[in-house]
Length: 50
Image (cartoon, rainbow, N blue to C red):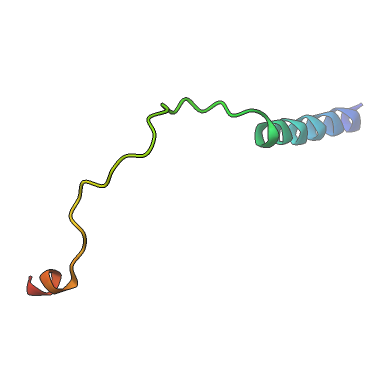
C-alpha cells in the first residue's frame, strides 16, 4: 500500500514537471515590441579619466 502511494507520488511529480516544461506558456508579459536604445554608448577613453 505504501509502495503504490510512493510510486503514484513520483509519477505525479514527474508528470507535473513534464506538463510545466512542455505545456503552453502562462506568462503575462505585455506585447510591446522592441524598444530603441536610449543610453550612451560605452567609450573606454572617458571611463579611464575617472
